[in-house]
Length: 298
Length: 39
Image (cartoon, each protein chain N blue to C red):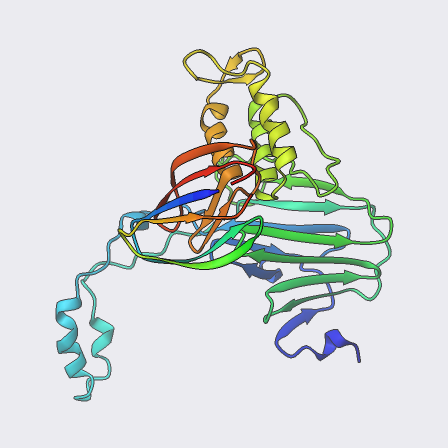
């Protein structure tokens, strides 16, 4: 018996999911992922806790029943076991807003041999694994870093990767954008000279603690005449096509390279884009303002 | 590197720099000024 079969806190299936209802689920409370586990058409469907369709429920307020609670608590011990069933403010049935997925990521390959296929979810770690022959795909959602991670290994791995927003029930106004993050070996660069591309690149590099790459991406914007005298930015170099992406994103890049925070973490100078400097009044996610000054010697 | 923290609410955080990490308790309204090692 293999180690995988000995897991008791999880579940597994011998075939990929054919419907989203049968996909394995993983999530952080913010992002979710439904994993189908098909080695030839490896789909992971991303959800988000705020991606819901309006149905009027967004305006619903909690019922004002707190003042009546003590009386209800007295009725239950008195034998009125059904008393709570009528404990409402009289409003009609209101469904919660239905979720809809954001998009799916597909890794497609030329259909290969299918043997020893198995997909499983480990309830202890929250990791989903799909193994088919020598191909292995693992997916988890990190609460700490707020990312969905898929890690695929196989001999001679090649795959067609696409981000596909065309899902049943998707609102027509939903727009999805994709970007490319630098890999650890740095082989991927910008796909074109748009400001938002360079700044996405810089943000990802800052998160990865890669100061050199963050600086290079930032310089691509600063050195190519993207900004008007008013500080409004353009989409392309030499102030071509007015566009606010860089005007808003550039300060974020500078901040992310110098001060990063989560509700319980502060990272100082994760990817400093200049050797000496001072930044003030940075708002953190744990409710504090930060002033920071630094130099190579202090 | 010198950092001033002005917390608006109590927080327990992990402070990280290139030289390591340390826990830090913050009290609302009590500024903290820290001098940390070379970056």
